Length: 334
Image (tube, rainbow, N blue to C red; front, side, top):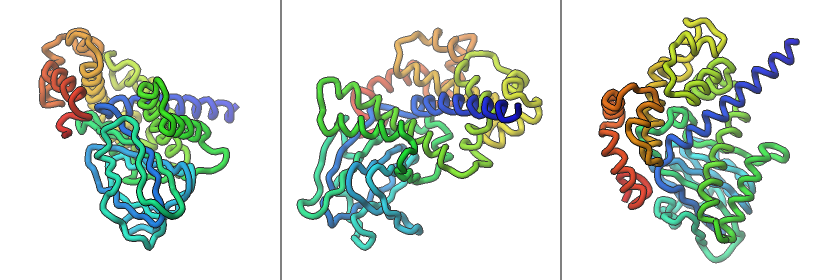
């Protein structure tokens, strides 16, 4: 019976992790994602500077490239490989490790269109990359993203991560040949691709002993996280959450705090107010209704807590977010 019980617990942990990963994307992104397909003609080398408050990935659709990072050996990338920068950390890419890295000729931050195509150079073997980027709200950015390595490389291997490969193919096809409906399809595919990138990293990384990766693969802690994310408005107690995790209260509180970086109820408060920010930005629900949905008994109590975390009242946050959404990709972005 032990193998069957272990299999069930692993499946539960995986399901909870997937739910939380979706929320990571939902909570962090502001404005529309942006994407670009770039054809690089060798010889070429480009520096992608650090951009705080962003997350971005590059997928090699065709050809090869070298990933260049300070104090690290160059890494050869091939078709299907993914480079993910969850916190805007800079890096370089080049047709050869010895090629100097030029200042950006293709500037990802200059991409304002949802879909864009570019070409750099005019001779030599071609490498084609697919870029996808997001602006992140620093207050709403999920701590899991901050817990990830600065740059993640997901090598393409036959038979591994088929969903990731399928999402890459679909997104590449939409960008290669935009058709009616592409404007609606591409943002969803970018979100899906980012979820698959995070899933693939969790699956390929070595056994985790700390941080969010360990939390999402821990059957008990991941179940408690899923409960909090599914029902943020419920008046949870540490004892109830420990019951979901099948742990004693003291063991659960200690392990949750060690992995997540804050006690369970403090994380619940953060998630409630982060969810509220998402609802204010993307729905027309009343402040009273949002307050009730995220667990506050009165609009006044909700507004006080919201202003403490976001440094602005809920109504003003909604107005500012709507203005920013229509006028730029992110608040404060020009």
